[in-house]
Image 1 (cartoon, rainbow, N blue to C red):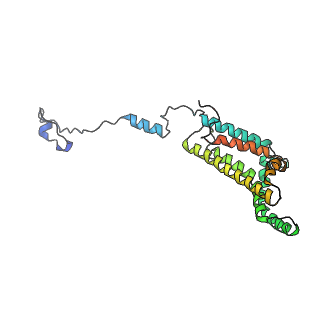
Image 2 (image 1 turned 30 degrees about the vertical axis):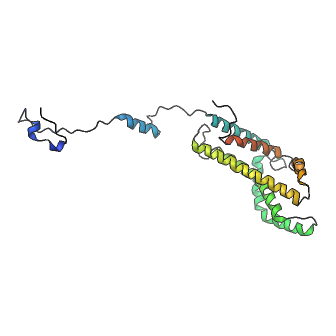
Image 3 (image 1 turned 90 degrees about the vertical axis):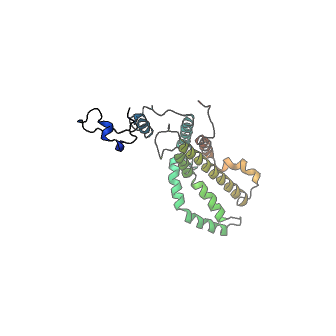
Length: 233
């Protein structure tokens, strides 16, 4: 038996036409058989029509995040966020107006510090007021970012990037609330001349509608995937 040539270009007429010298030269090209399975797998990974995966299901985190957003929206819609009866969405417009008035507010605080005998620190007082002014905007922006609705309208989606966004939103909001309370406590003790132990007792008296913000802040923990607010599936 004649040994088959290793390469097609090495095939000679003697190797292929020993039986029939009149027949034309036939060249056999050897290669590897290409399977359709890898291509099918590649299309499935790219989200092509070949994929037979079903619709996205609710994960434990996506359910937890949806519940957190629902609680926040309830508090934001019905709560008093500007201490004048304004809900969260109306308070955001007042926030923008207050931001535009910051230069005039600071001038007024400087004039008041010269006219009153009480110790008033205009920069500290202005910073504390500014934090309260932007509170509705910060809460709304934090939940909007943590909900991932800026990237996708499907709350069922769950991925590492989505969980990181929720974790970051909760962390930033927690730092903001901490700075807000610390500055408020500083103004209470310095400009108000009150003992520090009275601050928790008078906190709700100074901010009568603050409990809506506390409900919304508690809901922000649901954006953090590390905090399990319900049993796993």
